[in-house]
Image (cartoon, rainbow, N blue to C red):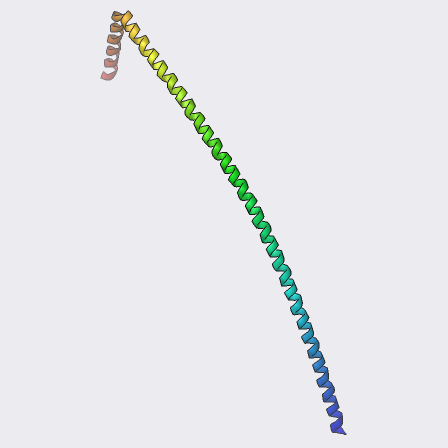
Length: 132
């Protein structure tokens, strides 16, 4: 009888361990399924997030490109305006130079002796300053 008692006990222990092993295997399978589902969700979120980031990057790129073109156009316009203003100033200086030259020639022609005296006085002053 002793052997019958122990053999029943071993069998029930073995069955209990097998049941627990099957339960653990089922839990592991469920965990694998949940991890796979979580990985799919994360991949989907990452994919949609990356798509959103790409979309935002394209929008920012377009805005920067437009701003760069606007800045370039304004710079070109400002440069053209500055060149035109410089040309106007140069033309004004040329006209003043011509007018001053004409006035100086007319003054010399009208008053040759006074011009000669002024030139002599300027020469003496310059010579005196340079001697020191």
